[in-house]
Image 1: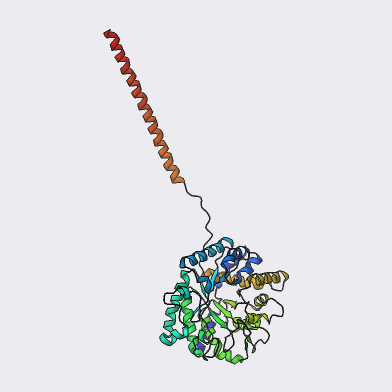
Image 2 (image 1 turned 90 degrees about the vertical axis):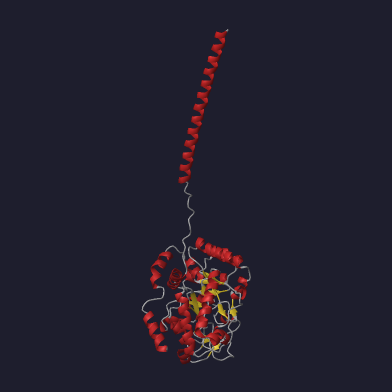
Length: 414
């Protein structure tokens, strides 16, 4: 199985995942400012009240929506999501990536509110009852549900290896050994790619038995051999099946970098790019999580994330992080080349996965037919008026003649 995936990766590594769209992406970028390119790298937490201002001023590449964004009627959600996408076309000229975490089980943003049967079950539970085909069927239903709300990215599947029920991440995984998990991930990604819907494998390089990083740091002391023999297998399967996105965790994985969480570690990004030959989009986990803030040495976590090699930055602190990256780019601590490469990859991805529509120009109504009809009607009306005038004067003239004859007859009788 491992040899099979490595061969597939080798075959795919000769060209980049979105390479066919790079030239078109470069054409789009010719008209973009530095700030607009940086904007494409951000997928902030969605806030309906601020969304219009965000799109007009900071021009994000997308948004991440959460459960509370779906606690409304179906039509209301469809209307506001459609509206923000239209604003993006109007002010940015590019579609938004609209992402949710719809993993199933404990993490369900949409199905909690809008699935008749209740939220989607976890992949582990489905697998135990119905095997991989059961998961594939449910994931097709997930895609259909997300499409119904004009969403285009599912931040799933969880590709972490965990077979110990005491692990924090266990309930979100398949709960099986590496080979079995890799088989599931490969098939699941294949289904998403064939359906032209974006999925995202997480949390590279592998979560293992670590703590929850939403509030505190998790330090992974496992050997690199463990990653090679276990954790990487599911990510290799995802890469072999052309997964468009991989999300990197905030764990500090000491075997390669003792100083930085993986999400802002250039070492771990180089491993993903160079050793695993991944050419798709690399995402951070939310840069506002508590795990990352203590390890940035007073440098913006967003700046470090870009320097490490992330293409897309997820954040709940959008303005602060966006401004920091713009400032760093203007001052030269982030190279323009790094931003250009990330932006090109993002736009090329959008060309491949998200339907573009050109901003519809307001066309002048074509009044030609109406004018012709009006001219014909005018001619007919004028003709009719002339006809009636002729008939009127003819009758009047005839009447006068008859009167004159009658008058003449009376005179002669007298």
